[in-house]
Amino acid sequence: MALPGSGEQTVGQAGSDAGITLPTRLPLVVLPSNRDDTTGKDARLVNCYMEKQETGETTIVKRPGLAKHTQPSGGAATGRGVYNWKGDIYSIFGSTLYKATTSKGTVNATNGVYRFSSCLGATHKLQLGDGVLAYNYDDSGGLVQITDVDFPTAFVKGWSYLDGTPYVMTAAAAIQGGGINDPVNWDALNVIIAQIEPDAGVALAKQLVYTVALKQWTTETFYDAANATGSPLGTVQGAKARW
Image (cartoon, rainbow, N blue to C red; front, side):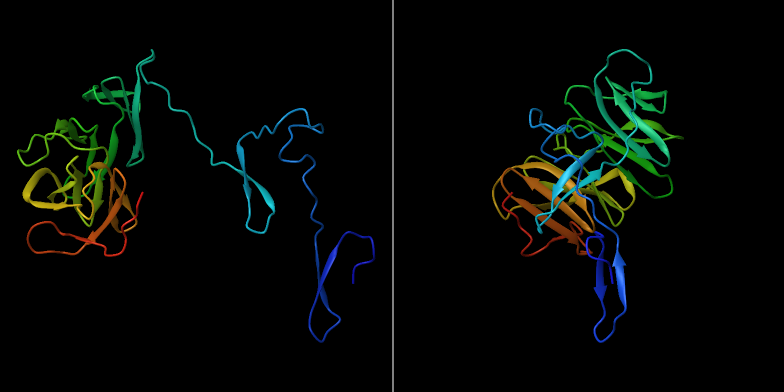
């Protein structure tokens, strides 16, 4: 048993005098709401953030470390996206795609940030698009714009690669799919509309084993239903969110 006033806690076992001594828990030296030992300055947390638990306790958590990736060529071009693919950092500054510090070609620069994905198959490919134009990249074939007639002429931000099929979505909430591990050739019949509600498409995403359609005021979720014709996707019933 701990001595009175020692600051230690002892957890006893039923029917036994044995116990486990727990270490003393010290309060934060400074309240999280104050920057120093006065009340004249608010909190200043460096490389960490504060969470309040359901129990009412407050914890300080160190944030994950991130290394800054600057424009490879110098200057002040606008950063439009960065992605880690196969161990290399790919970035877009201005209208140039870089692999590490090496330019890999010119991309569209009229529609803000890019979203990235990747695809398997005989030749693994990096996919990138800004909603106006989309591209495939691999080291042997280089940077090539997707020009298949069945690829949407305009699409919302985001990709979803699910069970070998790459997907994009239009503002009309039509989710268009490509071939199995083939982001070059797209199928006009491989389409499903997120139409529980009539709101327009805003972005497409992937979460676990689901393709997620983010719309103006709702979110719809799809799974790989392995349909023999049309889109492989099926709606996850009951998964609609009003968000």
